[in-house]
Length: 297
Image (cartoon, rainbow, N blue to C red):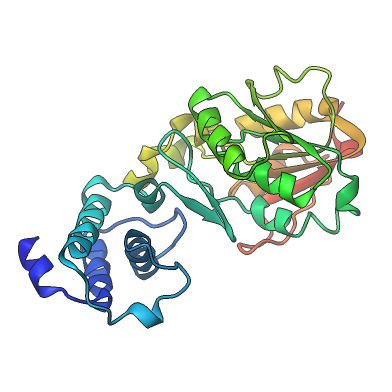
């Protein structure tokens, strides 16, 4: 490390070095970036407190000794500890929205965020008419917050079984000054929501199947296991949602659930349900929609 600190001088030098180190360490990318270059740029700009969307003007800037050491330290932690970048920086981004994260919560990466950015159009006609929303398995609270921003007249219940996750969600809700509209609820699925009904239920539940859990890259092993695994086929929690959701939706309500790569398995398990699969940046197989009237009683 001392020789690297002495020989590397500019941001361009350090990004090149990081890409080489990340490649040699065979890191896995999937928590905000999908390649070594993007991750190196992000970690470098964040560590130097530079704008994350403005690399070019700074590429040939020479660094101070303490800045060089800070970069080498964070690159080393990424390689040796195999920590996702979000845990190293304590932040994750969904679009333009930043959220605090640490190892008490899964790193946010939901396609539902994209749909909320469009206020779930065309399935929600008038965003101002949405008065109540549930975010089940809220984790860091990111989707609950995005729902509150998308539907300005809605009160949002953000539910999780993990007290550690709810503590992180509380911090994020406070950061967005939404404490009067987003209520944090400790509950195992719908258990503590008896009698409550919503215009909209969203959920990014655990959906990793047993085979995939065994083969997870080291980066994913830092995330809470209960936020990942969901039985042999990855659909255990989704089955709970489909069984219980209608009791908690208003007659014209909408259910939105993310299920990873399990579209075929879900449709085989529930051939009678008229799933809608909205288009996201990853295609049309990761998120399904169902109207309350189409759910089983």
